[in-house]
Length: 152
Image 1: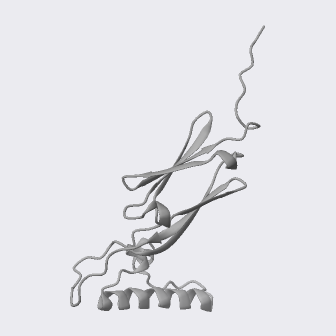
Image 2: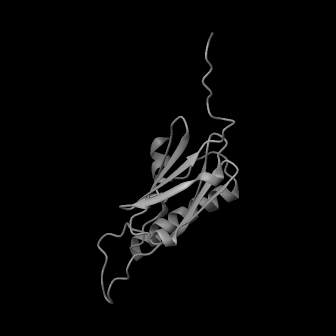
Image 3: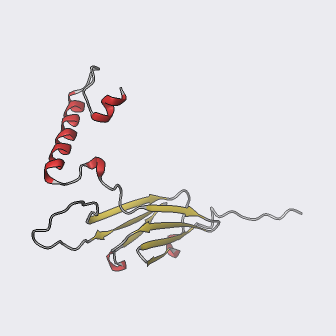
């Protein structure tokens, strides 16, 4: 069973025609990727940019790795409980006739929407880009901040 899943071999159970077409498409993508040198979807680096979301008592902190992206090329928006980061990563074009032995860096437009666990104060958001790491500090709304209650 595991062998069939790993190598995408057909099973003897009932399959819809769409499942079978999807299996054939994945096999063709993998086959064409070997001939053209482009990575198949299974071997791509993943979602860009990589993001960490942390929280302290007063704020949420979104940290995104954005090497090679300039601050002017970023668009950061806050709506509801979400923060959206979008932009474009540009990689210099190789000279004519260059052959790739490995190609893992991708260029192009990206967009990530990060859902935050609580209400935010969108008017006080601060964003800084330093050494390829974007840090967005998102203050929590006053209504969701914990309140210290004194006991008498």
